[in-house]
View 1 (cartoon, rainbow over the protein chains, first blue to last red):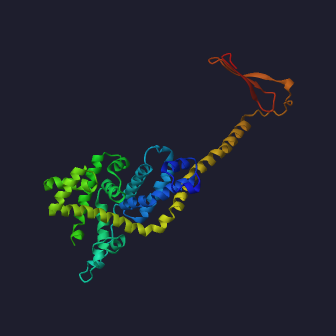
View 2: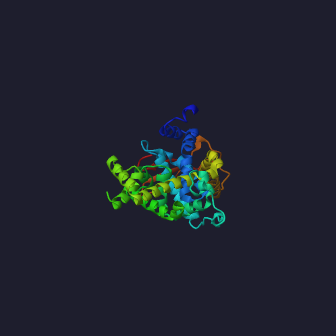
View 3: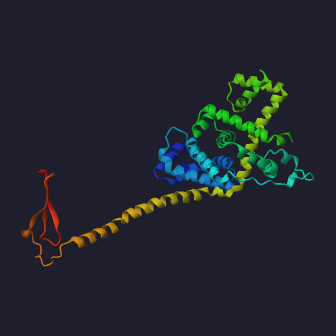
Length: 196
Length: 158
């Protein structure tokens, strides 16, 4: 496959090229999905370094298992299965007991964060609101791992229930119940921040 | 629609899983019910916070993500290496095996070195092995420097 054709090429064309030994085609696939993959891995592992390792390892696995990909299926559904399993494994091995440090700056009465930080509308606002950011990190970490995966795939990645079911090898009904449970738990855990 | 039913369906409405008529019914209820409106807003807020949270934390590793291919490439090479070293082992495995065979030949080779040099006209063919059960016969030429099997007859087949 020619270099200039790769950016717009369908996933399947890139997969065929990669299977034929074209590493640049595989690289293009990776560039396409790395950010989405990182967001999901970060949500599941809760740690940026772990997430980066997970994404790297998932792409390496994908490279070696590409011959098992069934044409006609979605690459990202297939890839996310590797990614989510990898992320859950990593979480089990290294992050379960990791505590999220509390930023005590805004716990004091005298210092209040500005309105935009209190009720964040941008990632930058949220990054400044360490209390909410840490509370989110803890609330996500407190979810059972497959519930965490479901809500991240749905809310962050925008996957349909059917796609999530394929990624996690479960029924659409299970996806729905896990998602509803996870949303309700997060809603409850973050209540004080929403109500101000 | 009552609140109990509305609360069961709010998340499905957020995820776009209702029929247009059901979604319209939920929206009508939420517009007229303060507590259900609060619930619906809270669920949407959770989703928004999750997206902001991942986006804010993703920025921490932006340079590493830009250079991800280098890491992936290294991972691919790292996995290739054990295979390559395994094939290297297979490639050179014959060396110790060959050496062992050579030692065996030297140990069991008859020490009679005064034998006449081999010539095709002076074959000294001997029946070296005779197994009555299988009717296997091996004809061995011992007139050469090295004994060698020159024929095997097994059940009248060669």
